[in-house]
Amino acid sequence: MSCAWFANLGQPRVPGDALAGVDSSSVKILGHFRLSDWASNIPANSYLTVFEATSSTTNSKEIRVFYNDDTRSFYVGALSDYFGMAEVRVLFIDLGTERCIIGWVSSSIPGTLSDIHFERFREPGSYWADAQKESTIEKNLFIVPITTDVQLWNSVTMVAVQTRESLKRGFDGNGSYYQVEKTFEPPLDVSSHYINISVQP
Image (cartoon, rainbow, N blue to C red; front, side, top):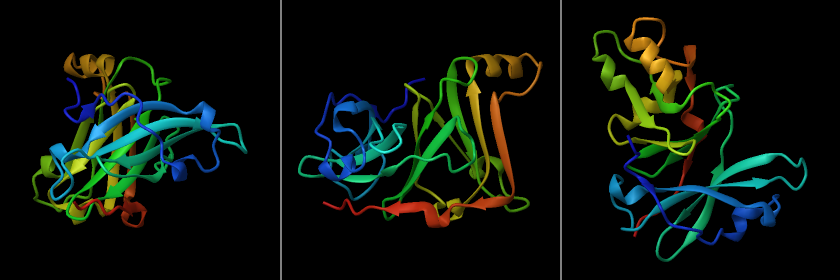
């Protein structure tokens, strides 16, 4: 299933502040996510663009994100392996009334990448599905919109990646549906890691 917010913008100009500390000639656009399909009170053509570039100091690959719409563009931040999983890098973004988690999943995970799942703390007796978010992984990228119970997503209890092969294994009753999974007990506090960006029209 294709991610509904994955867009084709070609090669937009990378804002100068997004290139600090990287070799501008190494920039490779990885993908774009259209925010205006699900986020409220933002310009009609609002996107988060993900790109890869080589660090000028360490020569390692960095994955960064910038915001762009019809009139402006600016640097948001760099993805990091915040969960201590080398295969998954993320960036937490606060849009005001909504939030999202944008990220990248490594092809080093065995199999064909399918979906990524997140779970937050769930009060006893509450419905389990309300505490979960998932997203299709497309071209190694994903975005998880958080439009309800926004403040409850200040902590994470589980991150897991599914592949086509692991899904088949699970359906067949031969093991876990997840190819890679990490749980956090106590829940991992992510509240201070959301980057607030003002994108009101």
